Length: 120
Image 1 (cartoon, one colour):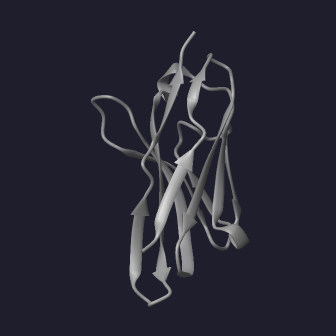
Image 2 (tube, rainbow, N blue to C red; image 1 turned 180 degrees about the horizontal axis):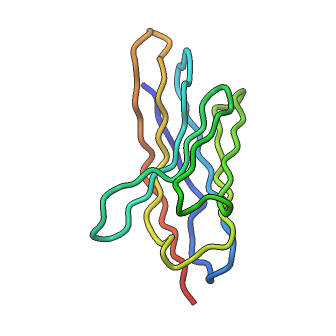
């Protein structure tokens, strides 16, 4: 079983920065991609950023130029550096990992979520 643990949220003023962390643990044969999603109250969950094993990244238009995703493949760890935060970035952020377990089963696992609040 693959578990995903995400952390790093908090309260920050507009224009401030936060760094979210996410790690995938368990017997993992291959980790294809890790991603961050967010869900604001009353809204659907949306993709924020994704990074593949090869290092390719995708960002939502709303965060391009402000958020940066980086990954430590050896540790199955991913960071989301969030700069120039806006009140619209307020949401619960969820980490997602997809890949193949050691028993060669596909997995698609989610973290428990971490709250990010941008407010003065």
